[in-house]
Amino acid sequence: MAARASLESAVAVEEAVDARLQQGLATLPDLLLSRQERARAAYEVEDALGTVSDAQAALAENLGIPPTAPMRVADLSTVPLPSDLAESVEQIIDRALGRRPDLAPRLAALRAREADERKAQAEFRPRLSFSGSVGQAVQRYRVGPPFGTFTMNETEYGAFLNFEWKLFDGFERENALREATSRRGAAEADLAALELRAIREVWKAYADVKTALRKHEFALALLTASKEAYESTLESYRTAGLATVLDVLAAQRDLARARTTEIQSRAELLTTSAALTFAAGD
Image 1 (cartoon, rainbow, N blue to C red):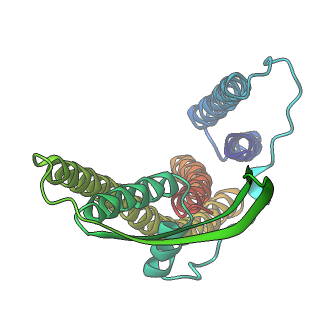
Image 2: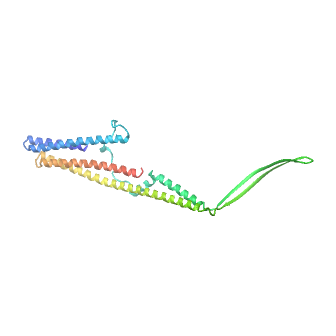
Image 3: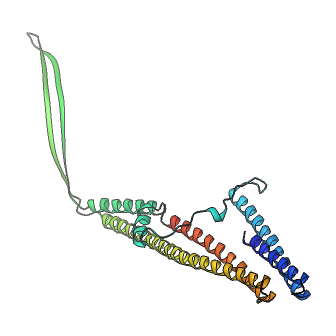
């Protein structure tokens, strides 16, 4: 945790000032300033712990479990970070349009409206159908005198070619076609709007990841430079006395801010990467 590391740095500064005070090389105000900085760092540790506790309670509420339930939260420093974007934004957009689950029902609705429109158009065409029948005629009768019995058993076939063309129905078909076309157009507009929103979300998430990658790179450079500046200033204060306690405290504060910046940039990179994965439908 950045706050704990800052507290350790503040304690180290206080010890260095106290050691120089024992040698008569520092003043009591210098020691009081270092103690003030240590107290500030200790306060920030407790404030950070309270923030973590509140975040865990909110997470438990969102998960639907009691806040007293044990939760294993991954250490942010151990989570691997993406080093680069392996795909172009166009590739991710193409994949998102084919995989996002919110687009699938809109596409299915459009296909259904297109089928309704084709059905309405088909009502204007003539219909040609073929039908057939087969039967068996069986008769048995007697005539006379002289009386005789006669039996007839014949197979009968029939074939029919039907032609039907509705010429006028009071504009019922025209109105049905207009309604089907209107619904198809509405479904197309709905799908197009959702696709544009998906493209915008992917584009924004992609840009956010690129920005977060650069910010994390600069945050690491800032943290390295701040560590070196702090260690150099502290060593100069301890040994040669070329730096003042104010210089050491300023370097310690800069290092604390750099640690916080690096952690925030790491969290931002993970968050934006997750947002890009979600926007792409992965």
